[in-house]
Length: 109
Ligand SMILES: N=c1c2ncn([C@@H]3O[C@H](COP(=O)(O)OP(=O)(O)OP(=O)(O)O)[C@@H](O)[C@H]3O)c2ncn1[C@@H]1O[C@H](COP(=O)(O)O)[C@@H](O)[C@H]1O
Image 1 (cartoon, rainbow, N blue to C red):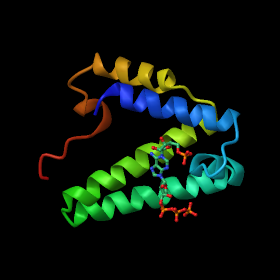
Image 2 (tube, rainbow, N blue to C red):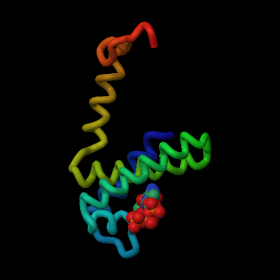
Image 3 (spheres, rainbow, N blue to C red):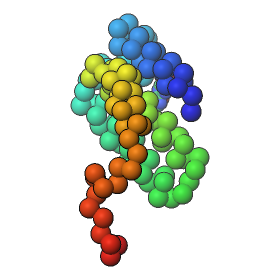
Image 4 (spheres, protein in one colour):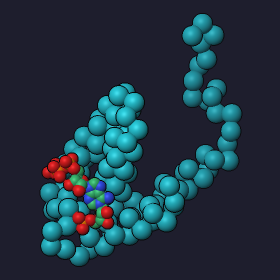
């Protein structure tokens, strides 16, 4: 996935938040509000999990795309920029060997 694809989609979504566009699904989500956006994020996440469980690569790619789109809508609704998340990912990229920080390793498992 190219970063420009994400940036371009985020930009379109941000524009939809500022300017109403007839027939726009994104505008429909913003009009419905936060609860609707969160519901869609939950739905798409669940559909992604089911697609992965069913080992359906095409469906998994589709559901991941749906989830990414709805996450970007949530980011715009919440006032987050791509950089807000990017900075955290970049900080984490500098750190390797994170296993012990987050998990107590059970030698029996
Ligand atoms: N990437 C997406 C995208 N991914 C998923 N979806 C929509 O998300 C919905 C998910 O399908 P569902 O069956 O779960 O939902 P639904 O029954 O259609 O609608 P709900 O009433 O459940 O919300 C579909 O209507 C898809 O069209 C998207 N809608 C828009 N975009 C992009 O957003 C940009 C702006 O689109 P508009 O706002 O429509 O102009 C465009 O460049 C599009 O590429």
